[in-house]
Structure formats: C-alpha cells, structure tokens
Image (cartoon, rainbow, N blue to C red; front, top):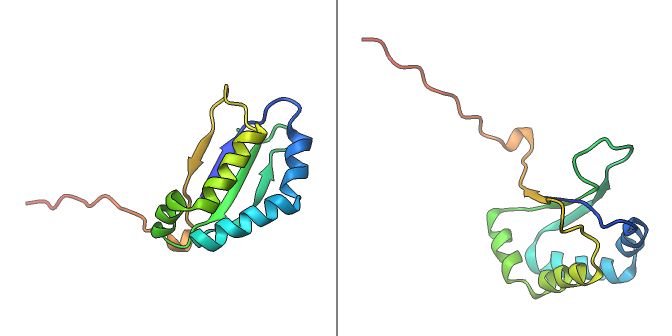
Amino acid sequence: MVFSYYLREDKGTELQKWLQSDEYKQMVADSEKETGMHYIGTYWTIMGFGDFDCEDWWEVPNWAALDKQRESKAAEKLWRRWLELDFVDPSRPSRTRVVRTTTDVKVMVRLKKEEG
C-alpha cells in the first residue's frame, strides 16, 4: 500500500529527522505487530521527477490486515502523531493506492464473442 503526499513548506528536514527517530521506529514496530503490515520505507521525489514529495510504502500480507489497521490502537497513535507534527500540506491532493507484484496480478482478458 502506498501513501503519496506533498509536504508543507520547510517541513522536509523535520520529517526526515522524525522518520529516523527512535520514537518513529517504535511506533512503526508497534503498528506492525498489531496489524501484520510491514513498513518498507518512505521514498522521496528528487529533482522534480514525481507527482508527490513523498510516498510511504507498506507491505500488506492480506486484505484482513487493512481491517486490523482500522482497529489498531498503535496505528491510530502513529497516525495521530503524524497529524500532530503537521508534515503534510492539506491544500494539495494526497493519494493512497494498493499495488501488487506482476506475479500476484490476475490479468482480465475480454472474451471474444462466439460467431453463429
């Protein structure tokens, strides 16, 4: 699962420090334990090559983990802290999407109509 967002002006350095902090690492570990999801990392757009400033990537083992995330106190604590620190620019769009690997995707093909 990928969360894509823009940062508030002058928040990049602060976010970078927080992502490397013991506080963040512990909050992520707690969230991973409760949800079964795994934090892969935060990726930053460089030199303007991207639609967003940052993306947080999480590995989701199954659809049930998304339900666990909604009920997780640890995930809620992480999200509330994230909002409290005010990194994201709310005046610009963000996006969440779920992606799968090539081997995990079932490609749907249009069936040809039978003649006759």
